[in-house]
Length: 115
Length: 115
DNA sequence: CCGTATCCAAAGAGATACTG
DNA sequence: CAGTATCTCTTTGGATACGG
Image (cartoon, each protein chain N blue to C red):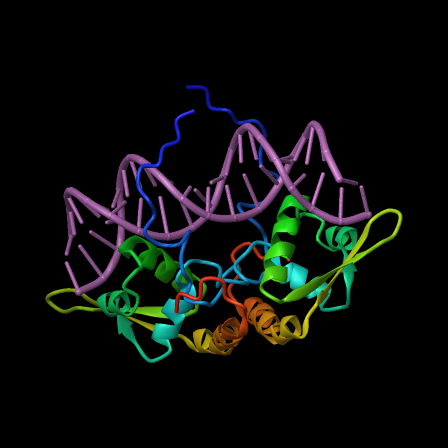
């Protein structure tokens, strides 16, 4: 296959978004954080809490968040592998922001208003 | 060419994100709101404040925000058209959320740390 | 159970050219 | 000045199949 490397993108992928949203911008990120705000969760529990998210995306989000220092990942040496995720103190610090967003969102004019 | 419409996407485009981010999710939205938080701005002023945004995207964002009731658009009947945008009271209400996001963002581990 | 690899489709953003 | 139209490309998310 021919790899078309027409031109190198001068800027980072998508848009910079200053620093705002660099973290929250990922799909399902707010949901993940919200779920984790209630306490540690296992991978499958997160999937139950957020049924519509795919394993691929959830993994992506979890890895991003872990890399950012927002959450911790604990692998327990059980017979069937058990992995637990939990917010770090840094992660807890951004819950107010999440709450603000949710709250403001409910005050907006919603076209579809599906919820 | 055969249009492959394999199956209809069951869910809306992209991801739901509860209601979070339905508004703030657009690229450059935080920047626009931030700029407008200092007072009314004209189209060209916004472009100066946010040099990297294209006219197309800025227009998009402005229209979205206007439709959501977040900002108002005033067309002044001057010889060269003058249009001024300003936050509505609803718009002002989401500034705290923006601030939270910005503040939290600055505490995150930044890989590239371009700013 | 906890993921990863691959493929595919859709959304979104940028550049450019053009209009009122 | 203040947009709009069009086109291309990148990114990203979903589905599915498979691996540790």
